[in-house]
Image (cartoon, rainbow, N blue to C red; front, side, top):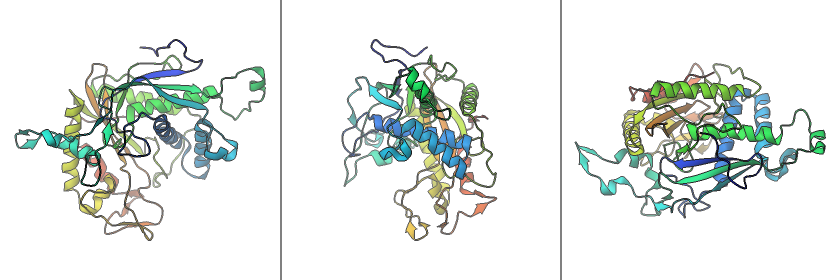
Length: 391
């Protein structure tokens, strides 16, 4: 399928219809307030994926970070017009009549015993912080199957002689900026998610188109076979990375400063195939919970902080680290035949700030924190998992 162009659509504008695969927890200033489809949240997610893409191509040393920052601000702008850069070159907007949001209710309220295993326990584990507590209300979400459009268009659309005459050779054009954002959009839809618990399958999206005319080699469709899907994702990633004009040479013993898409530091697997998002999330959640419980208590922080009902003392110099995102992203995709594919992505970056100390554990082995091996071992819980290979 091609992108659909609607009446009144602006020149160079690309509209991609999306549908939620899993509950989408997206809100405004009050996280426990009404659920909202917010363009600012989408723009922030796209910025993250563009930074990861650029960091894997340019590196995260001094010169690399400068190039990444320059590209990021050239595309998405900078607050206060930093370095002469103003608003984002690409306008991100959302449209469509989304279904009414609803309050999240954990499955445990209507569980049924099945062979000694409580149905819904895995999903509840993945979305544990979305439920109501004695002090906070439940989070609101958009249900799976919610449809909306994302529109991407250059903020400035003048391509007259004066504009071209004032354009410098090292400045990216508005058209270039749009193409960068489209690549980031593919990464967001295929590897990432939106909103709260996005690293634990929530906010997974699917594009209701296969290809877009502007970048016809960018394919949003996924084959249903696990091995073929892994090959497809790898080919698309290689193509996207080669679209940037440089490839970084990282030192094998040094981790990047932040998450980057590079074969040495970003590992991706297609875990398996399921009939529904509930079945997939349930199995992934149960396996993650069981595996994490078996890990030594002072290694569990690598899956993210805080750990519910457990106190782990990590310190950055004199400050205790109470919150740390997980390097493991779990994602659900819908394949061409409607099946659900589970993906896992591990970003290896410096897990703690420079100078941090970890009490009792977390010693480095050959420049690579041994805790990343713990995360990789989790993938072995899925016998059908196929690693994505890319360049």
